[in-house]
Length: 152
Image (tube, rainbow, N blue to C red; front, top):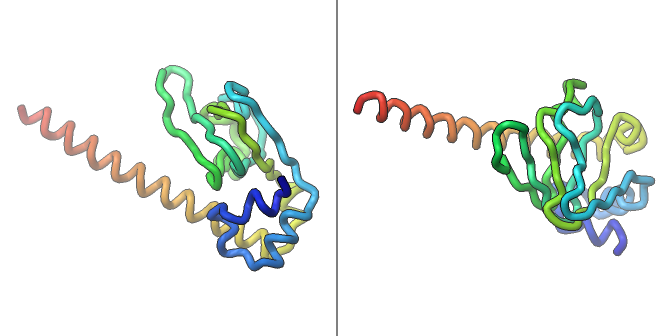
């Protein structure tokens, strides 16, 4: 399946013009496929690429927690924290099924047009703000729960 067909329904590309979608899909990409159970990112690794999940689902895990922290679907981005901070990976990302990703790094961003780069950047910012909102809501719930248990 052509990349254009794979990305046309992904949220990140909804603000792209038709021409930008075609330009993006015709670029030389680091398309990477993974099978169920493959480790895409290993916690602690020193790597500064981020990934756009094009097809399939992945699980986010952390050593010592024992549970899946999150499950991502097509259109989600992962690895962005290490991309921006250049620090080791905070968690692992494991393919929950057959997945296809686009690996983006500094070299990738030098190849794209400024307009496409800005739209990707804006999408990443929106996703990070959404995650921060979700985390804040969770912290409020935890604080309320803890406060209620202390009073009892």
